Length: 376
Image 1 (cartoon, one colour):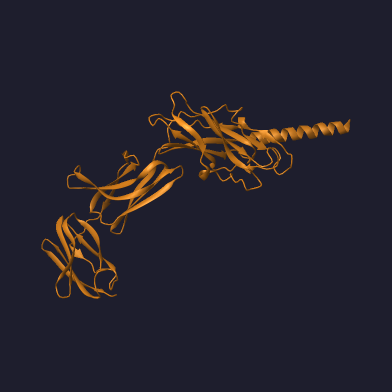
Image 2 (tube, one colour; image 1 turned 90 degrees about the vertical axis):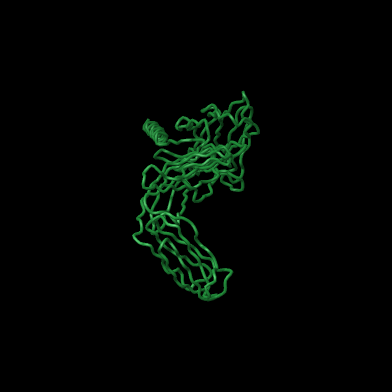
């Protein structure tokens, strides 16, 4: 009788331990969608959200998509974008394979040994299982995706006794949260955009959380004149985008010749199909120079390029020219109207021989001349 009692207590403890373990396990599954030209790509991702990590066993993840009217065709798996678990040569797990039919497609995670002692730990960060792809037949429609029969077709299993041969697996589908797919692909989501003065320059930094069909960013600048509402926007540069991305991307652009005073910046995000959208505006105030001045070029001596810096306190028509030692004009570097501010101009001497050269700046009644030395 005592032995029977001990056996029952032991069985009850094991059952209670299993129940507590299940209560500590939870996870999320999501679909990260991108529209990639004529394709609709879907990353299936999973992460553990509970206090106890678990080892994923053979599982299936399926999606339904509308067929009337037809929106897609040719279901496939993007093999080049498999998740880190897909390695057929690894003895611990077999592969992540495609299964599809009329109006549905999915991924089957098949570990070597099946529901046995092999599997993969599910981390707390989002981890891609694999990427599904549909060919778009109607560009005007959204995806209309939904999870397929959670609990009977879409099923998640964990290893009951990881590392134990024949330890079996446990259905934990009910412990998971299957996030409903958005009805459209992820946009180009700008999460930050800042402007910072560094010396005579302005450094713009911005970050995207996701990108879809992103050709790149045109950087635009506007200098606010004496009348606060009067400003003229102009493109000052372009930064190439990452196309499609589900992870944060960081960008930077340096405005080498910003005008003084209040300056505004904006980003024009452009898609590959020509569609565009403007970002928020960031503003920075730059100190206005007190006097006209031109600095000694740097470096000096130089080979083959050097920088000439000058500042102007008021709007002026500027000419900056380079002469040889005999007074013959070599090159005109600046010949235009410029706003108050600090300017850096690069001089390239690749076509010149060694020697002393002179640069002259003219701004209204202000005129200055300096020498520089080119050494080959």
